[in-house]
Amino acid sequence: MPCRNICSRIGSSFGYYSVGIKYCSRCEVYLFHNGYACPCCKCPLRTSPNNRRGKEKLRTKQAKQ
Image (cartoon, rainbow, N blue to C red; front, side, top):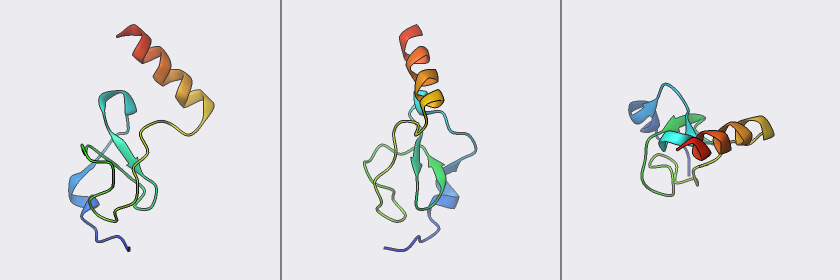
């Protein structure tokens, strides 16, 4: 399903997975959305970083809380 540009209206300007923001790889935008899929393209949202350094940062932030 193609992008319908809904994500541009509800997108976030920063991407911190630790505060609940998710990433849509098809629309290439960070979203604060409670659902599993992107409301724009229905693609599954990423809930954790892709690279090792980002995953380590997320683990340390979660351990501090």
